[in-house]
Amino acid sequence: MSRAYSGGVTSTCPICPRSPATLRLERRVVPVFQNVRYPTAAAAKAAATGRLAISECDRCGFVFNAAFDPTLAVYSTDYENDQAQSGQFRAYLDEIAARVLAAVDHERTAVVLEIGCGQAAFLMQLAGMPSARFSRFLGFDPAWRGGSMPPTVDVRPQLFDMTTAVELGARADAVVSRHVIEHVAEPVQFLRDIGRTIGPDASTKLMIETPSLDWIVERAVAFDFFYEHCNYFTPETLRYALERAGYRVLKLEAVFDGQYLWAEAEPAASTAGAVAPPAPRGLGVAIEALGRDGERLLAAWRGKLAASGARRVALWGAGAKGATWAALADPDAGLIDCLIDINPRKQGGFIAQTAHPVTSPETAAARGVRLVVPMNPNYRDEIDRIIRERALPFAMLDWD
Image 1 (cartoon, rainbow, N blue to C red):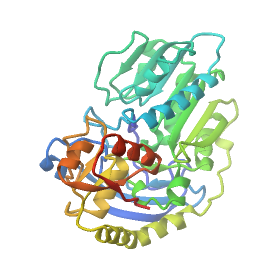
Image 2 (image 1 turned 30 degrees about the vertical axis):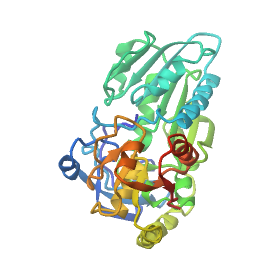
Image 3 (image 1 turned 180 degrees about the vertical axis):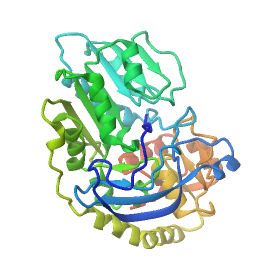
């Protein structure tokens, strides 16, 4: 999951050509990757860094990292952001699989193409649906590590492009791309390339899922701005990008308790170039406030820890949120003991730049951790259940 697309760096809006943008939040040195597992602390400290220059288009309000360099974000099998170990996330994948099934013509068996399929968790979820009349599942992802797959599932360890799609010789009835477009330097061109593969057949549906900028701003989640994500969509800007790329948007709504946006679209015959941009909603001002208040919020959070006593602290969640929060709150790795993750492939590794270790819940307990901070509020109940079921000696402290 989550791929970089080969495109150029731009200092103007990626979806609103030649439009100037205003810098809203800057971090001069940040890790390029939040989801790479580094095998040693030394390798983590030597990880590649980039610059974050979160900017807002003056014309359409699109928010993006103007300093993003796609040549730094080269994905490989070291990339690990599989969330399927979480029962709560698997239940969410069931919901998304049902959305795909509802969007596909049931009069014939269907071929599903997923662009940026990660370790094929979602394709496997689709393949296991007894009610689905899918005949073939195609996936593309350079982070694919291989493994045993049903004969109907075909995953290629490479970036998706038109050439490889033609070589496969299969007509896709549904194209799914989950948590990819926010990593893409040229999102409109990315969508157009998918459209050229689909062709003019409006019966083929494109489904896009991406994080919601509204959720980040409304919850004041300053650590949800990081290098892997060069684009930050609202419903208005996601619709605009799809329409500029030549699609008719059929459905666009917030999912996963508001954290993500889900869009369904089909090829449209209308002239994409005539689409009017949305009016900016002023989210850049709120992002500027997040930047100004950042140190104050971090100081308040450190005060929470000081008030809780001398207990060792761990962040629960070694994904992008946890890695970014650790880098902001504890750059010298003197405050946070470790990051906890239930994904065994992350355990035993280290996060970029700060070199905090990533452990299982049990290993964190053995290290003396007694206070855990859940990084994603959507998993708070699941974390609480794991703590109780495994009789772990943890109390929870929320970051917000």
